[in-house]
Length: 446
Ligand code: UGA
Image (cartoon, rainbow, N blue to C red):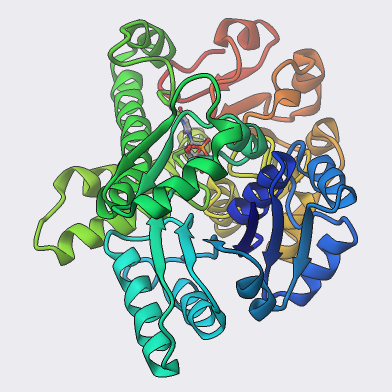
């Protein structure tokens, strides 16, 4: 099938490449000419395992192309994906200007039937708004083309985006049009082989499904962080509690890892947007409010532990050098949007500390965000971050941080203390090496 994808962010680029790999002919459209030129030359705008190879292969096969020419994108394909950004407005609601601008472009250039598929995470009711724009612009043109607007939310995780997209758990198709449903079944046939993963429903339910999924996962995380805060005040160990409750299949082991709060481009934005949608509809969502509040507080927890440690010894963080491992909001990505590391760094700087940080892939992104500043040194390896540092703070659970040489750590860190926001280690092991170990929801050791 010929497919056009508007937007070459995480969702659009990955979806476009995966559809091309499955045999479709995909044209990706973006307004950012530099990004398009880079993609044409095979340069990836994001770090995502497997993506580069997939893009190169499908480009060589002639099934994936990139352009800034929106009119061409609309004319070429009967099926058009909307995968442009929906950044939060100041009040937390999703900003639909890019989605609606693409809708106008589609209506301006369409010359036959089109199916517009919404992949961006958009509030309930957006498909109706897109349809309204299409109808209005077509009427202005005096054109009378058939169209359907389908909600088909994406559930990929950054860092595993290609794999998630290639092997979806479910394919949500929100439409009441048999024509559009048949088209999406054909489009997704290569991903729907072993058992039927397609769940067809009305458009609004599909739109809400996306928010409900992310809000549920965010709720699990905030719940665990809440219990972790209780555990550490009771002298209990949240990791034991996690294993204890996860073994109940009704609860499950996924997304119950306590830490420094959820970050990234999805959970924080989507929980706020859902709160906003609910309020607009006249409902006060007390649970979602609490999920969001717990998360805001949790992102300050690691700094609180560090500053409390020094305050308890009559000292302060002024003049201290803190080694930081991990800047990305989670492993296997260079994405630092809403990353808890940003809260930690800002708080450390405010307290007068210098940060010596390492991240396996987010260094360039950190440089872009923070620029040159005397209280930030970005270094090439985890061990280099420890040189001359007083203590270590771990923010992202990269695989490469999981088995450090604890003796080397104890030697390098002047104050011989590790603040772990991800509970990577066995406290007894760390303490055995002469280090003090402060983690989340567990008693301090050493
Ligand atoms: C999330 C969802 O997992 C995807 O299903 C969804 O498609 C995507 O949002 C989206 O809406 O586009 P993502 O933001 O890439 O994906 O990352 P996650 O792996 O879900 O992690 C989100 C945050 O939660 C990270 O900061 C992570 O560290 C944190 N987290 C996750 C925890 O603190 N504890 C956990 O147990 C799991």
